[in-house]
Amino acid sequence: MHQNLAARLDNIAPFHVMELMKMAAELEKQGRHLIHMGIGEPDFTAPQAVIDAAAKAMAAGRLQYTSALGLPALRAAISQHYRDVFDLDVPASRIIVTAGASAALLLACAALVEPGREVLMPDPCYPCNRHFVAAFEGRAKLIASGPDHRFQLTEEIVRQQWDERTSGVLLASPSNPTGTSIEHEELGKIVAAVKELGGFSIVDEIYQGLTYDGAPFSALSLDEDVVVINSFSKYFNMTGWRLGWLVVPERIVPALEKLAQNLFICPSSIAQYAALACFEPATIAIYEERKAEFKRRRDYIVPALRELGFGIPVMPDGAFYVYADCSSFTDDADAFAKQVLNEAGVVIVPGLDFGPATATSYVRLSYANSMENLQEAVARLKKFLTDR
Image (cartoon, one colour):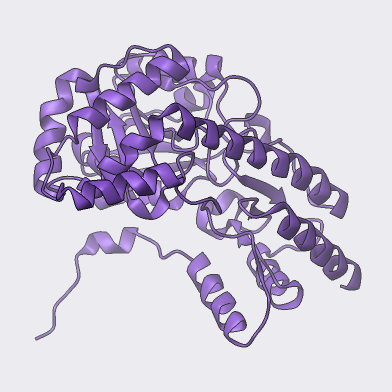
């Protein structure tokens, strides 16, 4: 029997970078030594206290379903974290623990995106964000946002682009792929404008803990109607544990709980018990040391890439990415990334996945790698560019 797939799949593009990852895996099978600057994953893993907490929970048999909203103790710990770090009172009742930030974004889009309606987001942006919108038959309206705007939307842009089809905005600060944040005052103006226009603001803050220049802030300080996404993957180094959270206005918690019950039952109980250890003072001290190491790497790699001739028009102030203009070397960033892989043995990501505006002229490099490997990558890139 011939079975047609749902038409919505036509609106979800494949991850082009996966082709590059397959090529890299094949080269490594052949014995090539590659330096990976492609994957958006901390090279640090969960601290021992987190692993021990997971083992203790398993030994105690704490393996049953939890509430769809998450463990009350973990929701309370996240609430306290907002108080400790940002001096914000975010009640635990507004916090929903999720199966990764991806589940949080899925739940937010399920609750807020209407079929046929548009959600504004910058180009470049993380591709899955637009695909979450597409999954609920909304339309991501990508708006070219260059270095003059820190690769982010502004209040002026939002007002210019808003029309009768627009429902809201989906922002990320700091952003993947650019590592740039929206400045506090500008984000406040955007949120106020969206509210005035009758829309919703979703702000992805999964890299918020990795902010290097100045004190980090949360969009939750701007308006209690903002929906904020966060994660244990990046600052807390728990990528494969699949645990995140969502902060929403109190009035929509019942709707999100209903969705979470039906779509996910609950997040992993083991990951939740493990995450409780993330907030212990000794564990936070480890995370802060690792954050300082990411900053040290950034402060090395950005000048080194500029010296090689890459254009980095905006200093990335967060995450662990550099979004670099390679147009002085090529007019095809995808072909350039493949050439760098094959000839220099360095894995970088072309702009193709992040939106059309920078697809051919930018590459993303992750500095979630050791300083030794970053230095070797720069040496290989220098030789490659000299020999071309």
